[in-house]
Length: 585
Image (cartoon, rainbow, N blue to C red):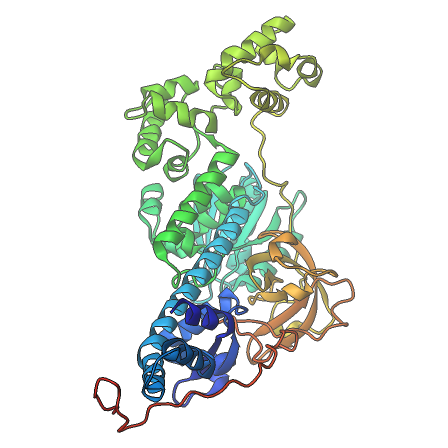
């Protein structure tokens, strides 16, 4: 019955209840123990939270429909112009109760799930893109520290190109040895940056390292805390074993942390995107759709930035358009065998990299210091002859044309328009000549956390802090302020104006200034605001944990208007006789 389905879709209410006896204080689904919201208004994160609560057998939920109105409408349709109205009325009520209601609810529950999946996958993809395109620190000597109390702090020193130089295990309770080891590494290797994972013992490690650095003569290395999500997954992966066969699995996380600082994109592509920690309910949504979307995001990011063919890892090369995993391994093997590539054209000698694959991939591959000056740019080899013609018309070699704004501005691009090359392509070529091999990512900046704020108990309402956005969700942004627990900036607190989508204001990895609105130590929740008034004009929204707990009653949600009373259709009772002679039981 299409009319019944549409009416339920428009006026149905999602209702969830607790199953059995549960302690609200001990459940992450407490806010859904007695929850209801219109089907047309419930956001995706609440649908996913309720579904997870059902899967964990803490919640039961249903879509409550306007039963009396639907039954009355069904009765009118089947009794119009017919005799035996009373019996047909009983049949209509029974048919809706036993057959139609459950069918419609199953269909609408599936619609809710699909809609929630698509929104969650979209958010995950957007967050992953921002994380992959985070500002790289570049080719610097970095000391990576993977913190830990019992197992110690794993230390790995990586070179400017990411190769492991030295490793060690340090213990925070052996402070003299810790100080001696860090001091030796800094002085001996000229360390420029120290990257500390944000896991257990992160702030204790950071505090001690900063004390050590302050005692050294300048120039001193800068200390940063790096998101280590997925580092343990990488450590046990086949890729990590191939890259670092001589290192124990417990030690492989530290080099990964250091490399994430050097180039987030190059390192994070080695890790299953679902393990990076920038999504919502990634294990609850459609896995094939999620994988397809995340693979598309990674490939897009890699191709936007470009890949240095003589230094890139096989996983990074595999995301270049036209390459793939098998060809990427062949490229690395050929590179190692010949000591590097001198030009893009040499890639044609790589096994299984044919002319078509080369045509698709060449524009995204870079060869710095190669035989041709355009090999280090995004100009495709197909257009080398065109650029050479431009240079010849100006009477200069191609090397003088690159990065020479005056010469590039003097080129009359209209002279080179042809059936194969249009004006947009010519403008892109001119832009690339101005900034060859340009990186679309932001410039690297150092975030800073307050030294006196190391745990949620140190926070006070009204404190102004600097933080880094770690995740975006439909209802706001999570921000790392250096206390092991991300705080939530609700969407209503992101700006002084109305904000519909958090991505319009902030992005993952962005530095932001926030004000503490409230701290709930028992539930480990921190509410933050980015409003200029510190959020004093609005009551702080409750922070949200992994279950995305909403308020049970939203005072700002528009309530459905009361409808005119409808006549109640009689319900069949036990013993009533249907037209076919069957009795209702």
